[in-house]
Image (cartoon, rainbow, N blue to C red):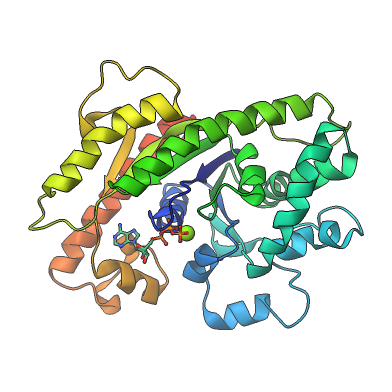
Length: 328
Ligand SMILES: Nc1ncnc2c1ncn2[C@@H]1O[C@H](COP(=O)(O)OP(=O)(O)OP(=O)(O)O)[C@@H](O)[C@H]1O
Ligand SMILES: [Mg+2]
């Protein structure tokens, strides 16, 4: 199982849209994928499922078929994780369904982190719950790849998810906030990774635990507010700053021999602003690159749909190469 977390502690940078589109793209490329919604806002699940299905998955009372159902025994103090329900979206694609109630787990995880340091078994079970849920889901689906969406913060839920992530892709928008977010990320990844490896020395026997590698795989820039399809000056200015900031703060390296802007080898892609195609895709509950004339993608829209397919296929292949995922 390969796990890739899409993360930036700046909100609204396109994390969820990216996980959604890449999950479908990898499925189309012939890889079995589990998309995992670990953001308590559950936006990824809302993109994947219609309201009727949501009502079934989120009934009054217990939500056995969501991520909350999986961790409920830990929250209740009655046992370990329940085996996950994996919602099939397509032959090659399934979803671990998100839940607003997941935020209830934040305090439990904050409390468990220091107790792992004392070798407390229950604390290790709580902290590794997401990892083990993903492992079980991937086994059930015979999935090679788990793509994970999380919320924009550096809280305990995200720490537990990130230590379960073998690779991290950072979606960005070229502005001051995203660059500032980038400066917080690298040091936080390194600290969490170190703290986890320290805790692993006191691990209980027999419990599958993640390594906490969190390899930074690169960043994806979401283009926004382009005028006449030409990037504005402000856009260029921020894009030119990203390679240096990424090198220094995320990779902890001296930013020498940098290639400018999007030629930087760590820039995985520049994602276009797809304008009205994005709401059209949301409405049709399919990725932009699967839109048809019947969904409203007519005329020039259809050219944009085809170009979107190429953009996402290129990005999927680039990430696969960086993270060592063999594509059929
Ligand atoms: N390439 C794109 N073209 C057009 N609109 C986009 C694109 N990517 C994302 N959006 C839109 O931008 C908004 C924010 O995107 P998204 O929800 O994916 O960001 P996020 O980083 O997951 O946000 P949050 O931090 O709240 O979880 C959404 O309305 C989405 O539809
Ligand atoms: Mg999101």
